Length: 302
Image (tube, rainbow, N blue to C red; front, side):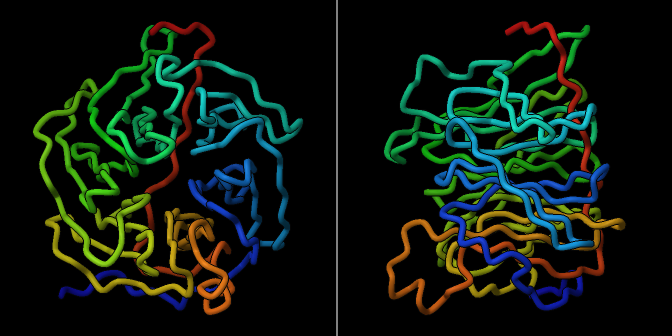
């Protein structure tokens, strides 16, 4: 097993006890971390410098949120993409998604270095392969959504390599991480199995500036790390069974933030792992990629 970035010991910075903590994202302008509790229908903000925490109620289950260029956020709720303004706590619908599939919901999302938004959907009951992978782009001042892949029960990821040429995306129940080639226009091709996991299920992905994948492992109590060639790097254990996703942040993007979840765990398991559902943080020797913002157009074309 090859060695990867040198990391500090994870510590719980917010004992939130989230039911389904997910989707951490760094807001560079605020120097703050935002994340969601899907089941708890909440948006959370953590400011590392002061330790200040703030929470907002969401009108439905949020899967992800990403920063917009105007300081607000685009949030994927169950029914579609909404603009969220932390200053007011309000959510405004910008685009319905999969209105013909009421049993689906939006799950994980990511903005790449070129400002393109990628997100996946999933079957809410986690039994049918009705989920898809989408790309949202800005073209001629308008918003366009493109279905890029389908057949997912639970989609997770997505994340891109530092050069923007490879996209990674998970089919979590199959314990499989896929890789795709990305062309100049944002089209995907050459889907292939990049890695499979044992002892847990791949959840969210983040890719650092050296191209290493950091994968939260649901029911695995760890972060798996994979080199760009797929070689497994030393995993990072956490005192939480359900590790959901990693985000890089801080002034130099050398702080790793990790969300976790209490969903599906028995009282006995929670007694053994009382920090499950908390937000964790630790340092790393290799920084993450800078968090890009998405510019949301006013006019929408599907």
